[in-house]
Amino acid sequence: MSPTLGAIAEFSPLLPVQVFDSGTYLRLCTIVTPLSGARYGTPILEARLEFEGGSEERLEVRKGSLVSLPVQQGQIAVLNLKSLHGTLIDPHSTKNTFKYKIHGGACGAVIDGRGRPLALPPDASRRRDLLKKWSMALGG
Image 1 (cartoon, rainbow, N blue to C red):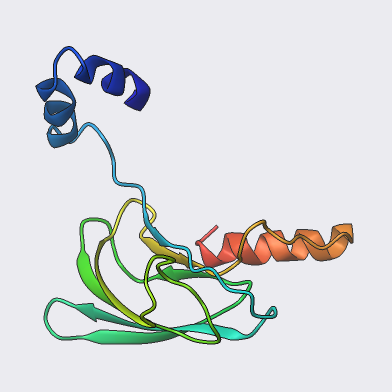
Image 2: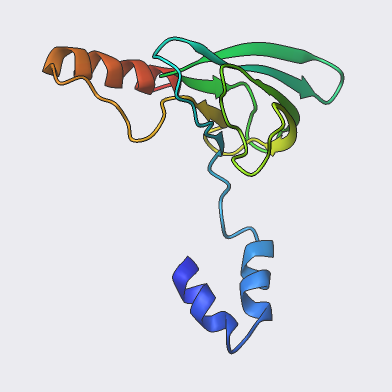
């Protein structure tokens, strides 16, 4: 539907805005994908999640992990990130700390520390175990 709305925008600029504002699109998930050259298992981020009402949760993200953040659909939180071991959160910035307002979607919010391209083990059994681990991290 998005490509169609982009094409229509040339003739009717308000229509895409009206569709987005109508609630037709479902927010699926907020995803943070840091870039890191660290070795598998090395801590790459320290995260602090602040919720309305003052509660907070602290998390450590390791290279190769997929971390589901406890942000429910429709909930808003502030995510504070500190990069470790040269990890890039924003490739256009030299800062190592960032603060983001995030929205929970149907799948919550996720920090994807797996890196790109995904490194899958050549051994079928180990690959299956890793895919199961990632699925379980997302509640699957």
